[in-house]
Structures are given as structure tokens and as C-alpha cells.
Length: 111
Length: 108
Image (cartoon, rainbow over all chains, first blue to last red; front, side, top):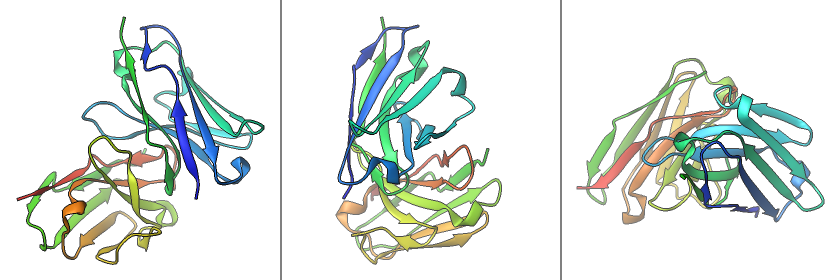
């Protein structure tokens, strides 16, 4: 059973960079497509990006601000979102769609 | 981008009743790469169905799903107390991956 755990700052200032890490256990990190998904308060889920080994894909609405990377030695997936605004406030999930999801981490963008 | 529209927005039902949820896609979903999730307050989504009709591991057989192309349905034959929450549909066959707006199933 794959287990995912997101971690990172819960508060980020406007215009700064949001950085999150997802730690993977229970399976090889090279065997899955790893996605980041977010959910703003009271709104629908929004897919951000995925990475599969060196292959990546991005939501066009966020592509210019997103970096996703894999550290196979640490079994971690990282997300960076630059130039954040209040609209980026959300619960951020790490997932291997559709089967495995982390519990999510709330990131609030505020000064 | 494939837009997913779920209906109804809210279902008010009693335990033991049958629930039918719908999701319509703006374009055909590639290879039926389609999933249903249940999300409870303060929790992440839990997959119920993938591949349009395949129950995920550990999901009770009161959950059945069908559909292909642009029209998909999730049926819960007899609602249990733990089934109440928000149900989301998702397509993961085309980029970007997209989700529906959700159907809230609440206790009547």
C-alpha cells in the first residue's frame, strides 16, 4: 500500500514561492505518475501537474509558475509555485491518480 | 480541456435509500479513464471507482458505476451512514486532468 505525506510551510506571503514536498513509502517512486492537486476552500479539486520519471505535464492555467521534481534517493516529489497570491490558498494534495492520495496540507497565502 | 458537469448539486436522502449521481463530460473521455471519489470534511478524496466501472480495493459492492464516452453514472444501492459526503467525478485520460464540481449527498 502506497502512503503519501505532504509537508511544507502553512503560510506563504504574497509574491513569494510556495514549496511543498511529498514523501512516498510502500512502493518504488519510479513506478507511478505523481501528481499535485489542490482544492481552494469551498471549491472543486484542481490538478496542477504530474511527473513520471523525467516526463512532466502541467495544467496550462498554472504552467508558467510551476516546477515539479523527483528525488528518487529521498523518495520525494517536490512542488514549487512562484508569485503566489491569495487565490493560491488551498489544501494541496500529492497523489498517484486515481488510487493513492495524501491527506493534504493547507497553505494560506497572506501577509 | 474536458469540462465535467455533475448533477444534481445536492441529494438529500435517508439511510437505506438509493442514490444516483451523474457526470457529463464536454468531450469523450479517453479509454474510460474516469474515476469517482468520496470526500468527507477535513479529509482527502477517497477513490471509489476507476476505469469508469471498476471498484477500487476495499469498496463495498453497493457502489456500482457505469458509462462511457461522455455520460457516467454512480449508483449507491442502499446508503449507509458513512456514505454521506461530497462525490467528485474525474477524467484522467486527457491533459489537463479535470474534476467535476461535486454532488453533496446529505442526510435527509
